[in-house]
Amino acid sequence: MKSWNTSLQANYGTPTIELISGKGALVTDIKGVEYLDFLAGIATNVLGNAHPAIVRAVSKQIATLGHVSNFYAHPNVLALSKKLVAMTGDKSARVFFCNSGAEANEAALKLSRKTGRTRIVATKEAFHGRTMGALSLTGQPGKRDPFKPLIKGITHVPYGDMGAMLKKVSKKTAMVIVEPIMGEAGVIVPPHGYLQALRELCDETGALLVFDCVQTGMGRTGDWFGYEYSGIQPDVITLAKGLGGGLPLGAMIALGGAANLFQAGDHGSTFGGNPVATAAGLAVIDTIEKKGLLPRVSAIGVELMADIALIEGVQSVRGAGLLIGIEFSSPIAKMVTKVCERNGVLVNGNSETVIRIAPPLIISDREVAKFLKVFTESVHEVSKKVSD
Ligand SMILES: *Cc1c(COP(=O)(O)O)cnc(C)c1O
Image (cartoon, rainbow, N blue to C red; front, side, top):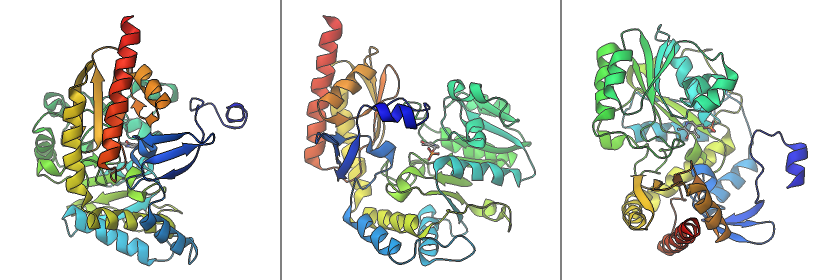
């Protein structure tokens, strides 16, 4: 792909596939080759590609009114925020719309400053985005180090380690931010009771508890946000990825007392709450509800994880719903990713030993079966090659 390297910056690797169309969980490249997409635009295309509900809502909106800015209200912004508030189960929750996950976390970071405190505790290996504020929250040295100095006062402790949290979180802490399940780090599920213990600690110290649900949100784990199983509520939820069903849309939802921390003039985004993006967001939620996708996601996830665990060479399988991490007993993840691609299935090699899958929530039983077949064969092919 020569023109990629001459006209685009080198910050991404050079892709080997150029996609031009898609329908449901299938995508087609410029040569006409079809792929079963088990990454779904990095967990964004929750309804797959070209879903009729999104196509209809977006087409109607762009043909009616494309953009208004936040100088004016729009029915979609009002409807989507109302919906999100209801989904939190907290009537006092209030929403700020933006365009990406990084922006949602930037908003949370700024919101935390309004507590009058400045210290923040985040977790090692966590991913919260790439802009300077979000990168300061991100716990991956490889992404952070070239851009230092970052924002001061942010400490990173090992994920899932309550002892480390207890040492660092104090009455001076403005916020604690964690992913309910770490996505980019390789689908890491925290130990039992972690989120509940964080809630207690934040209640004791007065720190805001922020859940970055950018990847776990919008039904991916079988719940709306991904933390519900814990039975507790955070003070702030950040969303993006699946929220716009493939369109750029993010949100920072503040609950309870945190809902009123921002005052007029404190924050803003020109495109935040754009009518077309919010039309897509409404279509996503409406479709997930009408098709009863949440229980289906949970059920498929459980079965799929059990089936993947049986494949020889797979050491462990973890995750929730359709956010699944597959750990191999040897460093074959990148090779398996390549072979899957050649065999018509797109997955994501997070590291040398982990593959992440995040298919659209509308995935059919037949597509799940096809994935299992191709994935199993690909693992066998690579294992054989490695042992030869
Ligand atoms: C992807 C991701 C982000 C960043 O989202 P962008 O839209 O790329 O800025 C933040 N947090 C989590 C948990 C993510 O998975």
